[in-house]
View: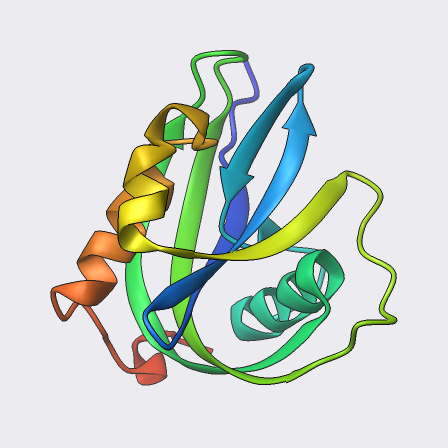
Length: 146
């Protein structure tokens, strides 16, 4: 058996007490997630986070640090994801940017709104990352070994 984890990145972006999320349709169901996606060949983790955020939301961001690193095994398909979650500062929005085809929309939600939509979260990692960020889980980018 040739097992491997899928390497992914996600980004927690807060502005004025609201968090930037994406709404996407997966298996016929609208779910909420952080801007997130797979690492591409020869791509740095930070670059992947910046790219995925722009592609999924139209927002240019500055990656400020790491919130956490975790594993998640998707119950729907058994795939294991190795996810590095970053936190970032929003810099500028490009409303004309064409979002990835699988993204329905980007939206800003408060923590209470996200909790109220917990049944729609793509994985438990979405809320966990925001809560970790809010309780001070913010680590320097220097944790990443080149």
